[in-house]
Length: 246
Picture 1 (cartoon, rainbow, N blue to C red):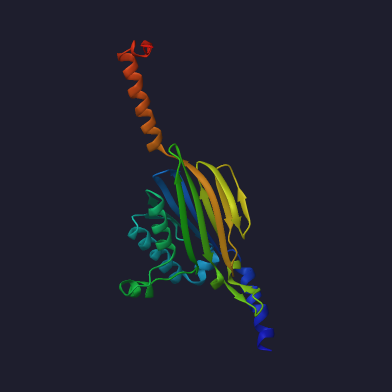
Picture 2 (picture 1 turned 60 degrees about the horizontal axis):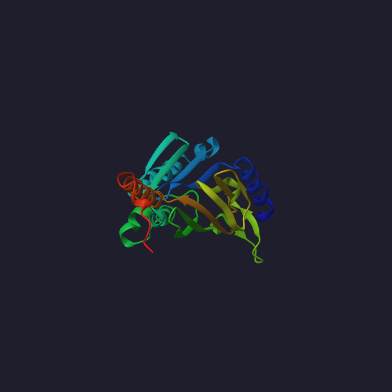
């Protein structure tokens, strides 16, 4: 009888609050040594009216976590925030991304975590393999996002109730060229310089993608060599006319 009365109530709440949080995280590669992690969160008025205190705590914690990683957070409105965290290379991207989305649990930060509030409970782990081809650099990105905390599973492992219906979750990857989805267990859509994956609650989402970025250091090195050779032949125009003796 209790289940009979609670089920319509839960369904009604999910319907009224459906999509009350838009949660987007993107990784933007501008070039080989410059990029940005961007998190864009917007909340509906229904959610903020229900729990304004918790919402403020969560947004405040995002600002603090961004500052700890040399990033900045901008409040667009009381219900919307954009966080930007710069990175200078692939290694720095991985360190900052994993730290920002997985709050530390060491003894030093445990007291801070106790006061921290995450309305969207997720765990994410990213890795990146890079191969330098002198003029360009090939990148292979792997991402695993655990959203099982956003779903209630049956004994067979199926999602029977998803609090993820309250949240629109997406991961975006932007790169100059050669962007390609290799493997993913979630739906995606691709545009000219970006891929958008729609993450599924109640399960582990896996993404593997590849892309290319120009290596300006390699291009600059070749440019300097060509400039030196051009200057040499201008200064010694007859050098190229010297024929080897037989």
